[in-house]
Image (cartoon, rainbow, N blue to C red; front, top):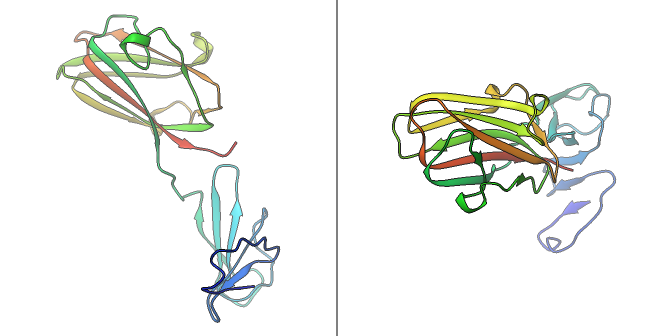
Length: 198
């Protein structure tokens, strides 16, 4: 099938791919990688994966002349979850969506992997520790501890997590503050997620 400027408003299901214009690239895709497929030179091949997408291109005439351009590197925008606390945090305090709901659980609304955590507060010498649990508060559910000294702002990335935590829709997250000296005040914590297919 050839896509023309008068077919933009139509939806088509294409079993064997499509081309753009008279001499544009040929697009196709499937769940397996394209190695061994005898498709035209310049073919772009999309392969869905468990956590994203792989993009291949046919760069030669042979059936194995494929190069992997992107492998799960198409980054989606982060979905932020902001937690706010006005005033000074107390030792052992549970962090919630805000002061009025500090005792409430944080509930995942979608399937996603935790990619970054940001912290900001008005105390430039905050000495803070935070414990992050998936589900109930128990040693087995502790997936990240975060400790820093003399910070007004701080960032943690997925490379600092013990594992790249993936949460399912409905999972509970519990976060607790541990007093390590200078308590944070008027704090905002951001949890930034990559949304994953369910």
